[in-house]
Length: 141
Image (cartoon, one colour):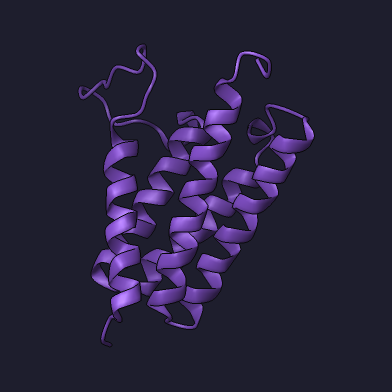
């Protein structure tokens, strides 16, 4: 399958956002390389990052199974009780938007449409960034 110029640009944007997000973290998030983390002990945001990386890998390798599984995992994150950390209208809007984008990823993977999957991933990632910016606002905390 050939990747269109539009999809290629979207993938470049995806990689740029992924690289930017890779450096994002709390100061107290120190990796512990001695022990592998138990899946159940990961926070919802750590699981979100894991599944987002799975989608990104799937996009980079044209692996629709990975894109779909990553989308499933992202949807599960939204449905987890620990996702709902705020009840403001704006937070609910961002959460719903994130969920729609993750569902779009799943649909694009099922249809084997890399262009739609890449665009859904970019839109979903931008929703994450906007939501995290919103949550860092002093008035929201």
